[in-house]
Length: 409
Ligand SMILES: Cc1cc2nc3c(=O)[nH]c(=O)nc-3n(C[C@H](O)[C@H](O)[C@H](O)COP(=O)(O)OP(=O)(O)OC[C@H]3O[C@@H](n4cnc5c(N)ncnc54)[C@H](O)[C@@H]3O)c2cc1C
Image 1 (cartoon, rainbow, N blue to C red):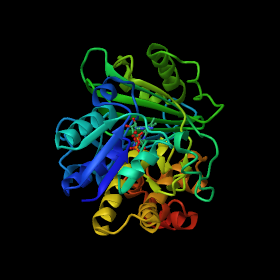
Image 2 (cartoon, helix red, strand yellow):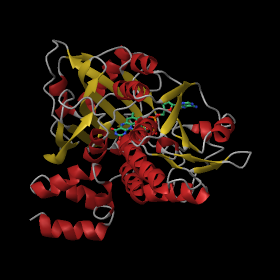
Image 3 (cartoon, rainbow, N blue to C red):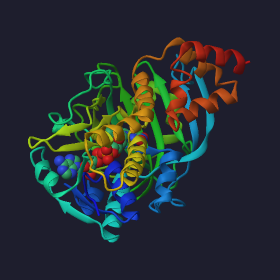
Image 4 (spheres, rainbow, N blue to C red):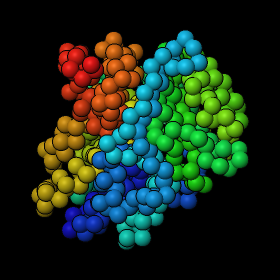
């Protein structure tokens, strides 16, 4: 039996490890945090997961939150204008419900499930040098240790595939509950607000202590939503979030009247550098290791693609490993595996990168047409689940205008 180690126990690494486990592989997961620490820790992400990724979780029998987590039924879009009402507004259903389960819940439960199914978990922070030891012990080393610079030297930036050199948004997310412990009267899906200052994303989430509403602001650097650097506690975050809501997205304010923060650790503030890396790293010994998830491709979370693509990576990597049988995991195998993933993941990166730029006129025209043409609204709402449709449609002005001409009447 092949010996496989996955460094990192997040959406990518655990899904792959749990998947390979169902096929009888003896997978080892190495991670720097145990399940209790993750669950008791600070908010990690907003993790809206769409139907394709949920289907994969269900197939593995690890979607433990169906029936508990609030279903996200669609998208509610508003473009800020000159008054308290949005200049453009529409709602559309997703073709299939999405779901957001707090990663502190999801990842800790998956780690426990993996160990409970006889998976080996080792604890410790793996360094680039430390990978050498794993390369000696295992046939295949996968690095799924999330985003950030820790493996910069091993997986350098792919200049041709990375559009930005700096983070493009300042992010502030806070989880809210109603002051009276009743459910908040929020839209049962993704609330998406767009203004010149940036974006608002709101969504119902199944969190550590039950259902909450995740309220996230994505600010263009230097603009009125780029305000989180000096905020250090949740109460100050809450006050600022309510002010931003009133000033930038006033039509959302009413549904959050009476809301309060759900807990002192239920906030996150920061920036994400979007980057695509060379996914195959060579250790000093010459051994090759393969990156996956955010370690290979980090998207700004503006389009909610990272966890979805991590799930997709797990599916592709798993099938490639199964198909490969007993042959050696050589560089051609590693590159071919990432290439198959990138074939589709490139659309998620394109969507994420394009959303970070000011919307071109044909996209604004599409958003406006969606107000009166339900099929246009439906198609727009569903590009987040199927970003390839974005590339084949809105990314191309000519195609987008032709589509509007025949669908927006
Ligand atoms: C604010 C925000 C909002 C987001 N919203 C969404 C969304 O709505 N939808 C969506 O699809 N995606 C979203 N994402 C992105 C999503 O969270 C990530 O893309 C996804 O979690 C990536 O999974 P991963 O397994 O690659 O990395 P991670 O989930 O980061 O997991 C990495 C794991 O590796 C461990 N680790 C790290 N370093 C080491 C080391 N040196 N040694 C051992 N273990 C290590 C970590 O503890 C962790 O368990 C969002 C991200 C952010 C920041």
